[in-house]
Image (cartoon, rainbow, N blue to C red; front, top):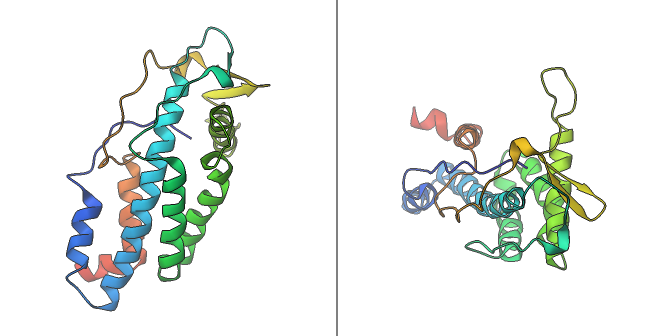
Length: 201
């Protein structure tokens, strides 16, 4: 799990697309609506997870910090509601998506489920860090070695790498912010796979 970077869409991208698609009644618009619905639900959950993860990066890096002592501030929405919303979007629209897209989003939903439904705040912190460690272990650096995590667990303590520590807690993200710039390209790719790109060009 990486950090938020404050990159915003131009207005509310998903609402604008949905408003346009609601005017259409053709198969292409139905496929597009499915992509938009799932992408919107994914971004909503991912944005809130990253906001909480960035709060962990702000606890300091001079010593280990117990997971139970890290008080996370809630974002705009609760994680459980957002997790349910993503599951609902996949259930309602997954059959209309390209298989690779549906499988990837479903895999993310399953992987993050223990974190979203963590029984307490300590469990949420541990779940976020464990997920981040798994993500980093799946990446290779320039020397073809697994990337080191920004934050790691040592027992029930959190240790933040100095390079990735934040001096202060992050601000709450905007509801119209993309979690990463390259997700805009991924979103365009989803539209292309759904057949919209060729129709629009």
